[in-house]
Image (cartoon, rainbow, N blue to C red; front, side):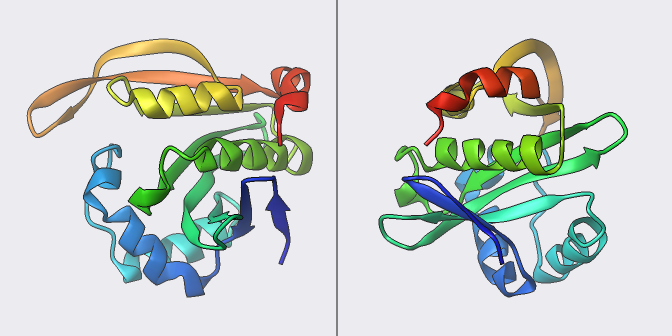
Length: 182
């Protein structure tokens, strides 16, 4: 199994053995609060995701490990991989709350961008994030993503409308910033 490593973090492809961790992290209230889709994740649903999305190449999902402690702390992924248009959507969650704010998310983002641009030959990686999630937006900027726009009141959850920030990074931009990567 290939592991992608920086000074702070490592990422490795998930396996079915990671299901319990992924489900636990994904159902953590602070993680759920930053997701558009808030239906609780079950082990069965995750295994279906694994079979239908990961094994078919539509999604590349990795477990993030803190190199200092050796602890698995979350997951980073590329979804809706479109090889014809050479683009995909980025997502991440740090499920271990004590590991947030340590730069692990930024390190994991840089690692998966390297995978996207060098191994998958993707041209554009984009993401959507709640405008209220300032910590995530700052982390994405540190990884090289740029704000492309704000969709006002784009998502309604429990009767409340939320603005969404759309961000992206192009392969040509990533190359210019590759010297910033760990």
